Length: 202
Image 1: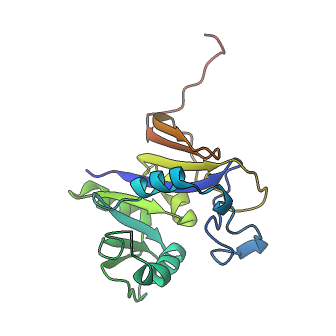
Image 2: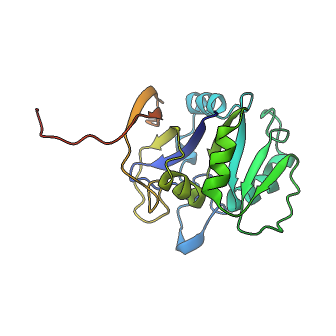
């Protein structure tokens, strides 16, 4: 059985929308696109390249993220080996959607069941980048095995959040952490059972 890993950029208040640039996602009037740019340095770039290495993984993407990636990566793949060749599973309600980016496979219908089947098969781990709507479905159905988060030292208030309507009570265990000179926190968590409640100090 392979793991499903969610890799995200988020602010201190949990916003994940349009981290890369103003044109990435301006829906619902979001005006802070590109918020992570001023916090990038050599340290952060190195860690991100390590986390986004596709040598031992395949991609699972929502439709909007796929469209952004498919419009960019075929023309800017230098320095990111494997980004075009890796297998990409694309979730969409449109069963007739044409996928032009090489090695792309459409997943339509019951998303949770399709992803469960993918996870049960032998193969490389599945990594999710972006794909905010898809992530809510994955969280709601307890399909996320690991969270690799890059937490930036800003708050935005409005914006789409990583932990939104799909979030369920779930415990995670910290497996790795790093902090960049500019204050970006890189953390990895793995799923670790149910939430425990009790009295403080007990």
